[in-house]
Length: 343
Ligand SMILES: NC(=O)c1ccc[n+]([C@@H]2O[C@H](COP(=O)([O-])OP(=O)(O)OC[C@H]3O[C@@H](n4cnc5c(N)ncnc54)[C@H](OP(=O)(O)O)[C@@H]3O)[C@@H](O)[C@H]2O)c1
Image (cartoon, rainbow, N blue to C red; front, side, top):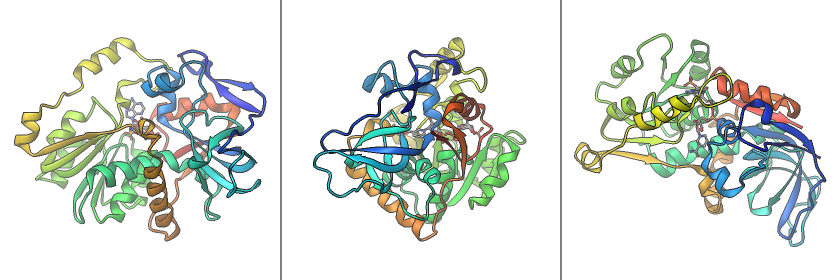
């Protein structure tokens, strides 16, 4: 088998494609012969040694990857409901960038025929992130004004669609003009191209009283503005900090990172209360043990996909051997939709 291994924190050179013995499933596990593995922005921060849960759960060396799709290659003792050859997709807490993956049965889901392996591998992380942010945390009502940063990206594309499905009035923000059409096609009511116009002036024109919900994974570059542009009551959901990191070169700029850490807003509980604004945050990789949440989320997501109420992710594929190019591309801020590796 082949897998991508990172032995120490660093740039693209640290992504080594290595040969290893095909793993055997233990009790309650299955082996998936992988046809596609999802790439997430977070994987690049795993490579840089900045992703806390990677250090906590795995350390070095690490194979990144939160999701795969493929066919069942072998079943371990006690697994009776999945046969060899069945098409599936799975959630992995790291380890997904590989041609063969062993996973606990609980994290494996049957692949609907309507999804390609690439689409199924692209689905779990970003769609569950969007589902969790919107329906566990924010609960937008029909007609709510929702602002989605990075709306053409993996999570952003899912957020726009799910917020529209929930009846919200959705404003998508993008960092490049080429992404505007993508967000319009996803169904957003308004798109702000912050590379061509003033983000917050445009946002104020769309929502003079502020937004009911803002979803922000930029971190320091927009967090203060996001908080200030909430209505009362309003909810800011924080789930990432991409703006702390460079778009080229693959390595952190340590002085900038330290400065951005210091500049990241701290929210005062007294102000939050008096202003009737909530700040919510989460990292899905720490919720891995909550299998029931994954089942609930994916159950609803697959139902909405089946009914055509949301669309599958738009996917760009890369051979596993070109993992470095996939990382450089997602870091560049130029990509839209999801990137997927094909072993
Ligand atoms: N908390 C969680 O559980 C969780 C789960 C999944 C993802 N996330 C976070 O959600 C965000 C989106 O993840 P994704 O995998 O779907 O990626 P993505 O949105 O497809 O790509 C990242 C996007 O972030 C924006 N961005 C802003 N500053 C950036 C910078 N300095 N460098 C690169 N991109 C920058 C860019 O879009 P614009 O320029 O158009 O804004 C870029 O296209 C990431 O921050 C990720 O860490 C969090």
